[in-house]
Image (cartoon, rainbow over all chains, first blue to last red; front, top):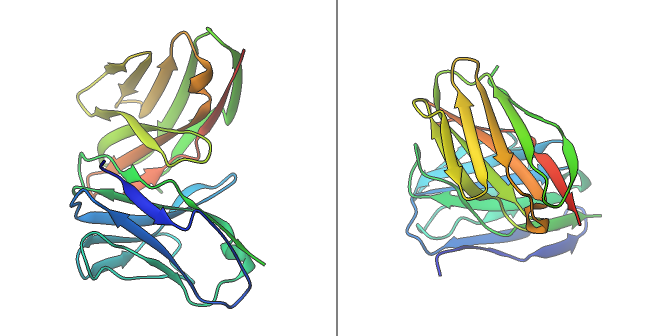
Length: 113
Length: 111
């Protein structure tokens, strides 16, 4: 089944403890991106990647890192999480840009205490 | 500044009734507009795409319209069902491939 898989679905951590949220897609998509979704703010792009080894900042990149060493994987790294990064995170992929829809994972709910 | 505004923020209707969700945008130059449906606890899923030359497009009980002159789109849901309860997100792509998300309309269908 074609899908975008995020892990974990739920994560509770403490301030400053490094964490990684994994994202994997099995559709051979070139484009991948990360978003956070907060009440009243909608989806905001954190980082995106047009292809392997090519990443760029989105609208809210502060406090996050990403890597794209393989086409299928696009992990989101929080080196030193803070409470304001408590949010619902979505990974998405598409064949390219232009007309293609984004295929979203089912989200990771992160709580930083 | 490129923006996408959706209205209403939330909407409650009875099962079987029709409803219309609105999306106004200022993105220019415009490439296309998509409506996504997001069920609670799930990622958004694309319902339909509208391009500059399209005025109306249907997908089952969902009908999207686009007026590129006034930069407005609507999503009409006919004979609503309980499974239509979700958030509906309008997403506009510019010709620079920049994607702008609306904040969504939360739709509640009551039995």
